[in-house]
Amino acid sequence: MEILRLGIDGQLSVDPSDVETASLDFGLLTRGQPLAVLHPVSAQDIARVVKAAYGSNQGMTVSARGHGHSINGQAQTTNGVVIQMSGWKGGNKPPRPHVWAEERYVDVWGGELWIDVLKSTLEYGLAPKSWTDYLYLSVGGTLSNAGISGQAFNHGPQISNVYELDVVTGKGEVLTCSEDENTELFHAVLGGLGQFGIITRARISLEPAPNMVRWIRVLYSNFSAFTSDQEHLISLHAEPSNQKFDYVEGFVIVAEGLINNWRSSLFSPQNPVKISTLFPTGGVLYCLEIAKNYHESTAQTIDQEVEFLLKKLNFISTSVFTTDLLYVDFLDRVHMAEMKLRSKGLWEVPHPWLNLFIPSSKIAEFDKGVFKGILGNKTSGPILIYPMNKNKWDHRSSVVTPDEGLFYLVALLRSALDSGEETQSLEYLNNQNRQILRYCDEAGIKVKRYLPHYTTQQEWMDHFGNKWDRFYEMKMEFDPRHILASGQRIFTPTFPSLSNMPS
Image 1 (spheres, helix red, strand yellow):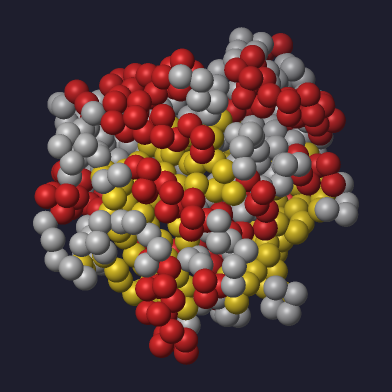
Image 2: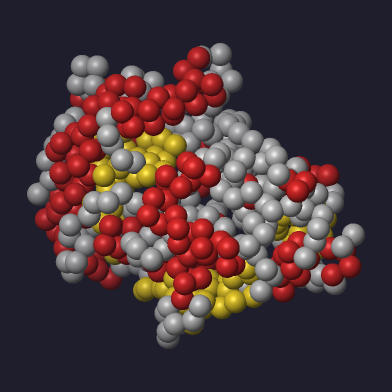
C-alpha cells in the first residue's frame, strides 16, 4: 500500500503470474517470495520504490531482475519488490537505445537486452566491442557481473567498455557516475553484483560493425598443444586486425555422444573425417573455436589472413570445420541452440552451472584432475574453456580474478534432466560440482568463481580477498540498510523480520 501511493508511472503488479515469474530464474534451483513486481518506465520509478524501502520499518527489500538468467536466485527477494527491468507491460516503456554515431557510443536502459542493443546500433553500422555468448541478457545484469565472451582477450569484458552509468543507490538517490564523476561508485557498480545500486542507464562504447564472420573449429587431442595455441592467439591482441582473430574460445568434448552437437549443421569439413576415430583411448578432445570478422568489400583477403594464422597452430590437420555467416547470426548463435532445446522441452530444466576463473599456471593440473578425472566420459552440457588477458580488466572494478597475467574461464554449463540416468540428475551434478571445488582446494588451485554463489559472509570475504574491505565500505555508503540484491546473500538486511537470513 505504501508503494501504491508513490505515484509511479510504470506498473506495480501483485498478479500471481507476475509474482510467480519473478520468484524463479534460469537455474530453477531456488525460489523467491516477492510481495510485488514493479515494471518501471524510468529511473525515478525505481528511485521512489527504493527510497520507500529505505525509509520503511516493514523490512522491505528490492531486487532488480533482467531476463531472469541468474542461476542461484541472485535476482530474487523475499518480503520485498522485484524490479522487472526487462519485458515491459502496459503502454509506457523505458527509453529506447540512443545511438551517438559520431561519438561512437550508445545510451541504453539497464533492462535492455543485448540483442536489442545490437539491432539498434547496427542501424548506424556500429556495434559494441565486447559481448556475452548469449544475447538475451540484460545490460544491467551482465555489467553487474562482468560480461565475457571470446572478444574479452582483445577488448576486455563488457565492464571495460562502459563510459558512464546512471545508478539508483540503496538510499533511493539517482546518481550519474563515470571516470570523472562519482568515480568510486562507477567502479564499484561494475561487477558489483547489484550491491551498491541498480543500473538504469549505461553508455557503451561502439566500433564499426563488420557484416560477415568466418567461424572456424579445429580439434586437438593434446591439451598442452590446445592451451599453447589459445595463449598464442590471445597474445596477438595488440597486433593489427588483419594479424589476429577477433574471437577466441574453446570447449571440451569428454564423450563421443557430444560429437553430433559439436558438429552442427552450419559446418562442413574441409577434409571429411570420422571424428570419433580421433578420440584417444578413454581420453578427451578439445575444440578451439575462433572467428574473424570481415566486410564483403574485403572478402578477397580473408582466406589469406586466416590461412596465415592457422599455419602457426598445432591442431589435428584433418579436423578443420569452417563456415561463413552474417555477423548478427554469429553473435546470436546460442539463441538458435535455445530454440532447438525449447522445442524438445530441454530448456526449462534445472541448470547447476559452475563457472570458474583458473590461473593459467594450474590449467594443466585442472585438466588432469577434472576433465580427465572427475568428469569421466559423462557430461550433460557444454564445457567452455578459454584464456583471457588480465591487463584488459580494470582492477578498480568489483570483479575478482586470479593473481596471474593470464587466466582461464572454465564454464560447466550443464542441465539436470529427469531421464532416469543418475549422471544427469540434479543431485549427481551438484555433488560433482562440490567435488570439483574440493579438488581445486586440495590441489592448491586458487580458483575464483564467476557468477559466484555463497551462503555465508565468511565465504564472500574469502572470495573477495583484499577487495573485501573496500566492498564493505562501499556497501555501507551506498546501501547502508542492505536493501538491494539480498538474493546474493552477501549482506543481511538490517530489518528485524529478516534476521533469520544467513550472515
